[in-house]
Length: 169
Image (cartoon, rainbow, N blue to C red; front, side, top):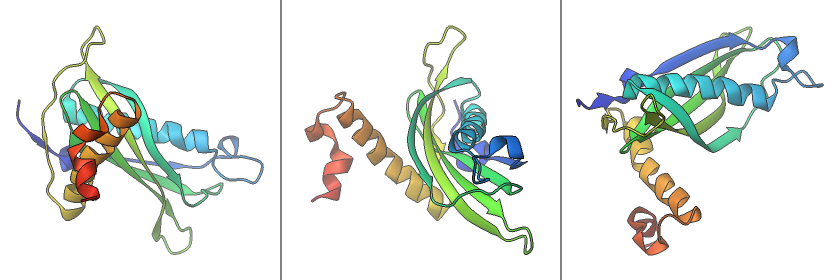
């Protein structure tokens, strides 16, 4: 199994915000954005693993800016780290200014996916090789996020979370 780069998983989904997708103040429903991010992230995870993937968790979502009716929304998703069968997918959400065409970062999210076989059993996936500075930063942070999730779920002892402990030493 050959390692893959984050770029090989890159998925870009661009769409328009329509009236049926907005709340009473004409902004995109948060749940609609979550669904769009889930689809983009699942494609990125599938591109990395070349397997069926299932959403394991939504680790982080930041709704930093509302997305108004009529906006052009672009979601960029890339695998930020691959573990044994799971992978973290980091997403940036951009909205395009109607007049200038400038893209403004509106939101970000981190989802975790697991690659499975046809019976739903987890399968081994290729490792990820980060290339850019941002990919390397997200790659390193992914292990800390995974350890934190495992500690909070009671699946790892805090004393075994070496990456987390290193933050406080």
